[in-house]
Length: 407
Image (cartoon, rainbow, N blue to C red; front, top):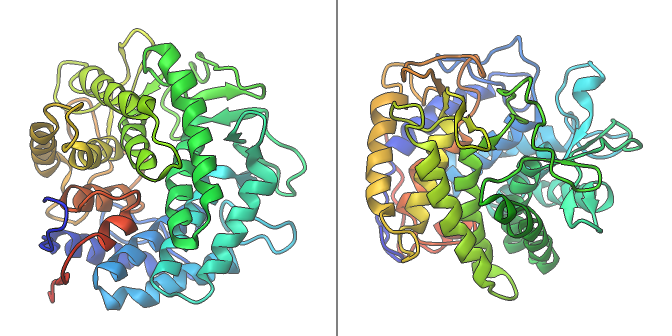
């Protein structure tokens, strides 16, 4: 779809949202969905799932789905009340009473900022206050001025920082800061995003031939052997995470479009990250599909295929296929969309399988079900939308009316 066109095929998006709405079958916020699209009540309601689902429902409202507005309001209410720490500030990891699981993490805080910004954009009462609280936590606690990146976590009272910085949380910080900057009109958030990108990509990934280190010590030194004994960790895997190379590629181009000064290195890096992810991640073990991780020699480590890796590849190829520096992105998009339809799309139960095994069969080693639709929704929408520095701005850039499916 070229920039400015008004046609959107929202049929599959509508089906995905219908699948996701069952997440409201929880006491507060949104629950984690199992493979059948029912809430797994054995899993405590979490800030992460509630924030991601709130963001998705806010996106649906922006696209014209008025029936999802009460769900956005539900999510913001949970983030403003039960999931917010009224004593120490910030946001709890989940409603679990376990102390360790309720440490304060930059990862969840960034998703709260993303969700609240999207919710404020569609007029939800109280969303701006939630966004401001997340912004305050980032500035007052997580932000490290010397390094220009976010610390990963604190204890529940924000007294003890973990001696660790992670690329994952900082990547989602760039996403959230850009989205919030446009909704809240705060340019300082873009400047923070630019500093994070410079540290992670221009100074770290470039030095490793675009094989991005994910883990850093308290002084900002890369820890290349981190979690070598637990390589399949959901948030902190050992080695190079293919999906993050794609995600950073897209974010760099989006950032360059709204930063105060366009930097040549961003577009160069975006092209290099894309090519490394494509060449080293696709069929690295001889079978089609994107692996989760590879080692520093480009060899497969975790051979399962998480859905989010392919989703990010689709979103990135769709977003950047207009760039001359990324040849073949249009054919990549068609290939990867076809693979998703053949292997990840669950036509029987709804949604996407969240993981395939090395034989490309549905598996459940990392997730027990289909917890949320955050990645899948973006993979469906971004390739259809004109360019923008956030999903919300992409939708705003459409000229003409959007027709939401009636069934």
